[in-house]
Length: 212
Image (cartoon, rainbow, N blue to C red; front, top):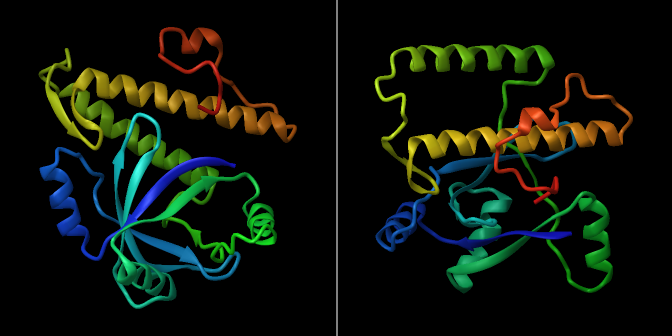
């Protein structure tokens, strides 16, 4: 397991966001959470939502209850004790096994919650169609763009940043995920089709290791 992030439980996301912005933080937009109550079951609202402060390494999550659900009531019970850090999230490749190990060691972890965002790309055809639509929008935007030197400063969730650095970050970030996906495919015996080569990645500020 590795440390992923910590989470503050707050009763009012808007008030917490305003206070954080006054302190100079830039937050992600509010995101309502959903989960599956049974494996393979439909996605239903979890009754919680979050905003995040993205850091150079990891992030800080601000969670708030939004409805009357079991997960939301867990948050409200914790907030009734105090407003602040109630959650330390770890990354795990085997969550069920790690949960059982922690339970056996006496840590009494809460039952796992299968959070997942609703998606419209269930199949390969869906993903290809989505990618084609994104590319078409990008081409139309680039065709009409006046500032192709990308000098304008953009407001992003990681702060005010010059546009060309935003695009560079998007490029290498996506490239790193492509490397990771190819490594996972190879691990299960699938040869990636047209995997990225060192020459494809030349010049991008990628970390040497896959998982950092």
